Length: 391
Ligand SMILES: Cc1cc2nc3c(=O)[nH]c(=O)nc-3n(C[C@H](O)[C@H](O)[C@H](O)COP(=O)(O)OP(=O)(O)OC[C@H]3O[C@@H](n4cnc5c(N)ncnc54)[C@H](O)[C@@H]3O)c2cc1C
Image (tube, rainbow, N blue to C red; front, side, top):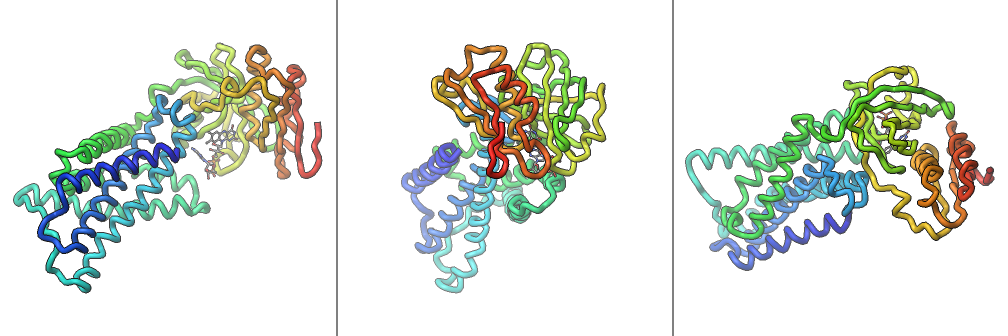
């Protein structure tokens, strides 16, 4: 994640620097005014570039799972690209506002002359300026509620749906207000490519088409309670499910009005289109799920995603698999898969150390993990609760 974002920031800064070297700074301006103008351009470029990356990553591009290390990391990169974009947007706004201070310190003389196109273009540029300003205010409000952990997730998710619209407003602002000289320089090419990716992501999001090609319908075939606050749901999927590797997750929707929730697939793939989930009552929706779900109910699954894959581990090393609470689910899928394919198993004796939560669920290793481990001798299921380790 850090490498990808550093690369984008470096590329944009170099392209901007190249433009300053080749095209030169605006003529006829005093040094401080020129500095302000270039800082305005650089902060704006960085903000729209990172926002474009965030928007594109929102489309869940599976081809980026390998270089970024799985869809959960793609999501993390999306999140940090968006946060950094907001920071640069705030900086851009502050630099824009600094003109009054500069006027007071060094006067209006020496201001960098504005590009003037006249006619309809000028009207559009005024509109772009206003839209950009309002979008920045909305963006900063969104950043504040995203960082405020106590803000209800459900409301946040609803508000987050406005992001593609805000992005399109910012893209319009950037396209109309970037200096015309940029479009014949590498900085312009880079900007155009990034904005094209961002617009693509926005259009897909607004049309509700993200991940649609990876969605499969099915129905609930069994429900169980492995612990008081954990619901095990087994689903049979219609044709089209590509199968999954143990450790992967899927976006699950039992109810179209609620939307999708990510859950790890807690079973191995047997090629029969059946998968199961273990869902802990952690929030508003998951607390009601046991009451709302019934056998035979339709389900929509999108995936599989993720690369928490045992095949990527060093198999000749002794391993300790550490799971906390409901985080045991990928290991349940690993254990089940190892029984079917012992050749992929770790060569040394290994242990699944389960840090059970003190509150409620899975104080002991879940029965399914103990059962799976007992049929599969290389792995022992242990439970760390408080100071005692129980088998
Ligand atoms: C890759 C991944 C795998 C997961 N696997 C499991 C699993 O196997 N079993 C399990 O019980 N839980 C799992 N979770 C957590 C599960 O998605 C949330 O507990 C659940 O969505 C909470 O929904 P809620 O409406 O009840 O909670 P809320 O009260 O709405 O939210 C509680 C917290 O859950 C998270 N959350 C809620 N909805 C989503 C969403 N759509 N996308 C991402 N995060 C969300 C947010 O951080 C939020 O702050 C997984 C999460 C991720 C990201």
